[in-house]
Length: 197
Image 1 (cartoon, rainbow, N blue to C red):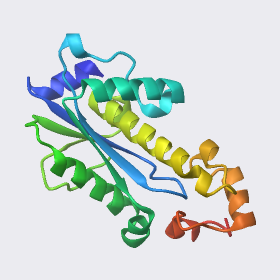
Image 2: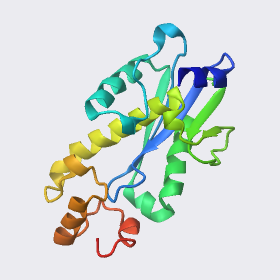
Image 3: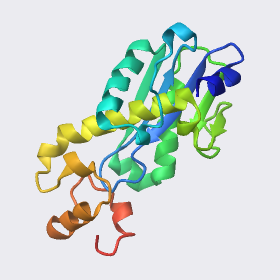
């Protein structure tokens, strides 16, 4: 991952962007960007695709990334926006907020996934969170930020086991929806695709 990013940096700085929460039935999508130093003295060991890490390891790395980052930004795009403009456009909106927040001159902006128009030149890396150090770091920031937010509001929705499923469409979550119906924090546009949840 480090080698890949060094090859993309041309001696300059990079910004990595990734998101968490595109798939859940509940809650916001969260997009994070991060600019990290690439010199050996500041490399954070253990950074990887957030999905391949335990929650405890993600939490540890989150603190290290925040501490070492030259800059970072975390954007939350709410349920109403997701329902209004769709999840892809909502994710792009979060990415644009991250790009617009950049104060550091970077050589390259690396974005996980397929090409999207962010209004500035970007390098789109398919499976970027498993390839790029910066994108993996951004994936950790986005995932931890979203999980923490869901856990903070979970007691407002005691009928849903949000601390466990984080709003994803698990069998337990679908069963809860059948029993209690959706809340204001559920993505109505997602529920229309389910067979009565």
